Length: 172
Image (cartoon, rainbow, N blue to C red; front, side, top):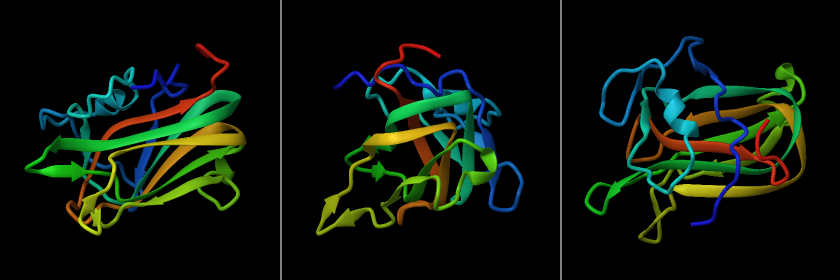
């Protein structure tokens, strides 16, 4: 496994808003309700995606304020993979955004990438749970994750990790 570097999102409490304007319910990997389960998403990445959180929404935004504008040259997400029997609970349709101003987040201007894993397999092959996206010329204060739809196996979001990286930074 490649070392991803210092996660710029570490230690930042995200603003999480569901499609109805409220806050979705969270449960940690042991299925216990938790208001701080989001902290599991930014732990140092080890490749273990057994630890994850369940977000009881398939349409929400998760916004991180970095405190200042930073160059971002990598974004990483990971869904939950349990075992061969239950398969991969990869993230369905989602977008990653970066913006200088909060009001520009979740617009076409801030969109870095849109991923569509709504079908769990293509030609019988299950899709990958983890995704790393290299970025060039991406800079901003705000990093946003926008979940649009869960995958075809689930109606909730099972997320193991999210990260934003700058190869030149070891900490903020």
